[in-house]
Length: 239
Image (cartoon, rainbow, N blue to C red):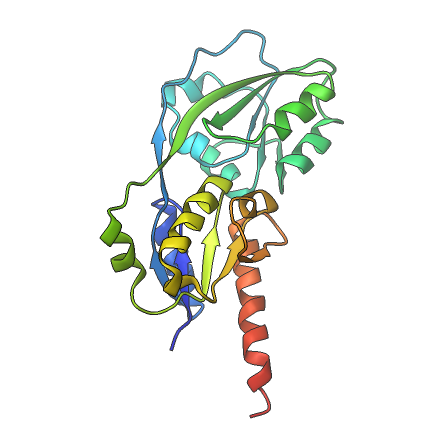
């Protein structure tokens, strides 16, 4: 029987993840906990020196006319998926926000004005790090991750009768929502390992069996999944 893996990210990413899981021999269970909705961006400020972005959603949901105004400015991003979604030349791709801020310390001119294309829910570390370097940071919200409303009986139907081997957790908000669901549907989560994209995502879970990806992206999560699968199979190798 294939191991059942819960996919909690929003669509269309959830279906793409499910396809990758099937290729690896797992049985995906899709239950998006949030949905990404576009926001009307604020007017761009004057005197921008550089752009940063930490999520592909910034480019998926930004108006084309808005992005066109930024076309000639140097762009620095977190993750290959964000770089691909940008659809333009990217000056720097870093594995996470901390690495991005460290790399920019040697790239940006003193007291640069940096615009961060971001979502309504975000962590403050990148802004604080850049400000500590003496830069001015303007955050422009382009999307929001809103909780998906599920009817009481809908969750159980989507989870199915069999226990979940792993649940993939992509954000702290998603972890908080999933923690409440797991408390209500205990039979599905009794032995579940919660594979989190980062320590921040894991912070939304309480008293759960947690594994954090070595790299904060889906490739890192799938690598952790493979580790768990090999570990589970190891006692049976000699039989």
